[in-house]
Image (cartoon, rainbow, N blue to C red; front, side, top):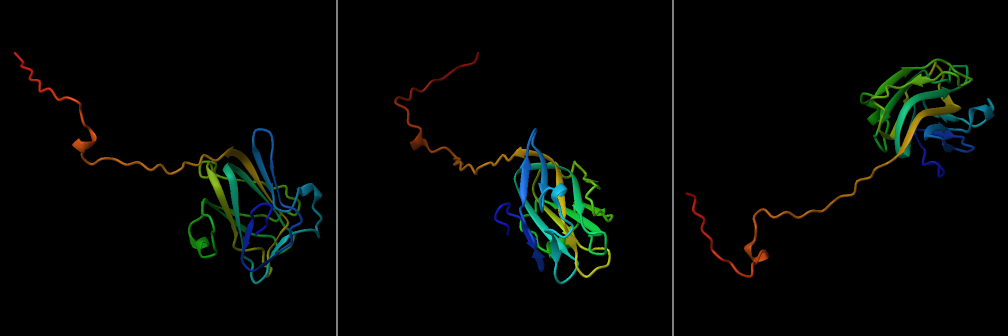
Length: 191
């Protein structure tokens, strides 16, 4: 786990991270840079690469709720670029076993070495995200997958955490708890 962001990359893979940053500015637009701003990326610079096979899984917890509007993925212009991206929302500590379930949204990716393609999400499905998992199941034919940049665009709002309220209710009233000073019997006649 990267200590600055809480980013977890699952699977057998090498992680080459220079600096992970989370930018929140203006009216809380969110752009998350996996490996730094894309304008400063060196093609031979920091990247994430799978080790044994082509699968990669990213677990990204947010400190608030995010309305995710788009995703940008940048890789090399060869077979190591991911070919498919599957998004899962609000499944903390997701593993490769969990990736067998139906994703919220799947994208067929194009090779994008410059990070110019943005993949729009279904906003109705990603309007209240506190944890995002991104699964890259395959690439364009290489043995490993390399990713230089992941950008997430959307709006961040503060999380509303509801604490547990402990309430005791009486199933039936206990007369000893409701003592009256004086009980005066009253009778009312209806004529």
